[in-house]
Amino acid sequence: MWLVSAFAIAQAIQRIAPNILEAKARGANINIVVGFDVQSTSAEALKRINSLGVNSILVHNARGGHTFHPKIYLFEASGERAEVFVGSNNLTDGGLYTNYEASTRTAFEFPADYEEYAQFFPSLETYLKPTGTTAQVLTKELIDILVLRG
Image (cartoon, rainbow, N blue to C red; front, side):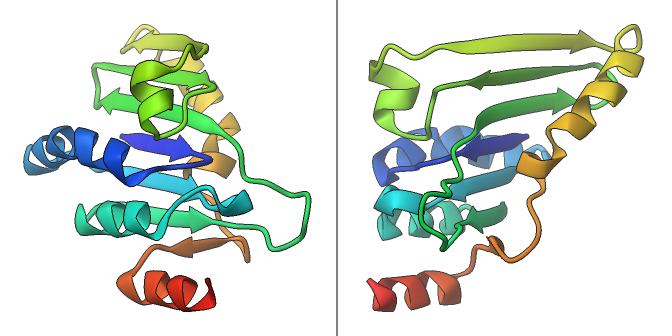
């Protein structure tokens, strides 16, 4: 599972936490990639994400005018199917529950769609597995540093 969002708020993370923890208990590999450009993601949201004990990456480009802004939700059932949602939904209450948002869903049924999925997946990897100077593994120490910096 990959949850990629430009912004996240603590309340939304708290609302989806039981589902994430349930999937984790079943052995799911869970990845959360979140941005915090334009002061949009709170320290509390980062702390809640970190408390889930899942793979988490924080993305931020210090250069003005460069905002990490994707919203991608990918769910895989190994060997069975995959569903990808790409749209306007942030990891916020508005984005998940109350706003009028738009997204597109692409479903793959395996093994029939495996070839197509194998070609599609690499187009998302920049967002699902960000690297380089703009991406850092989310840790308590990183959160503490960011809080100190304001």
